[in-house]
Image (cartoon, rainbow, N blue to C red; front, top):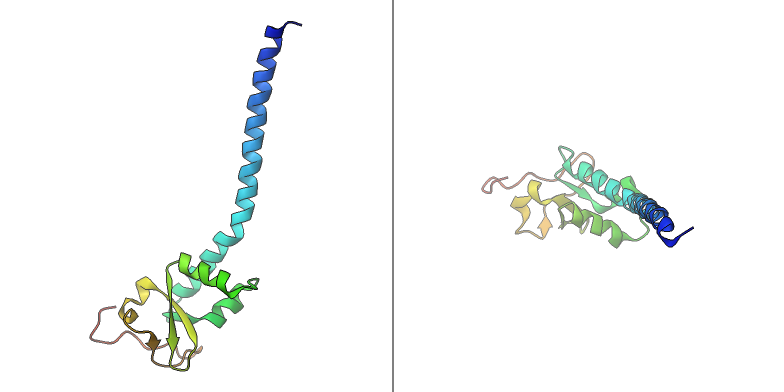
Length: 128
């Protein structure tokens, strides 16, 4: 066999090897970020559910489960466009910016959040 006879086989094997390596790395990245993407979708769905403009951090955490570190869950909330407020009793609540623009100037939201009380609507003098 001459040197020039080996070159086409080497080129073909290099192309196949590169393609397989790309596919394997793509699959690994897909698996790695699947949980993160699905968590963001779930959080967004919870925060879009009517009539609740805001959700307590404990409710979000109980629905998502699997987050031992609260700050990791808070990072997911921030990635979906959520902001944090406190209620009068000190409870941490989160809501989407687009649904809660009227509360941007407030740090404490009046009322107490529970299943029957989805927190007050925006003040009437401010747009929704």
